[in-house]
Image 1 (cartoon, rainbow, N blue to C red):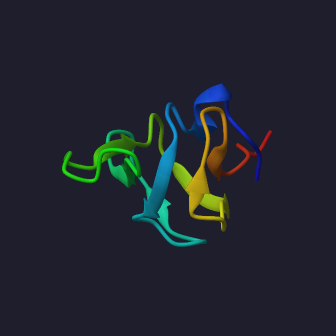
Image 2: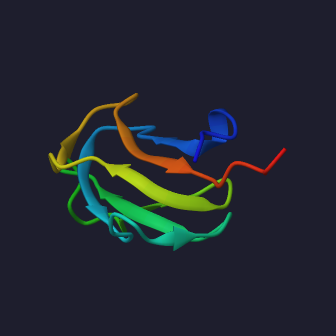
Length: 83
């Protein structure tokens, strides 16, 4: 298995509490919900959805809930094409 591109990584765009929607080992699709970020300083606002940008298998998932911009939520892997 390998990382296909930079799209294999899902990053936080803002500060908040991350609620993941995919488990380790799950096969996910581009556009699928990866989770939501709850704004701690604006709890009345709706959570901000975060989506996967490519297909793959969840190889790594962030464990801490508290997040800052730039924190990595997920790393996806894809099968290597046989040569």
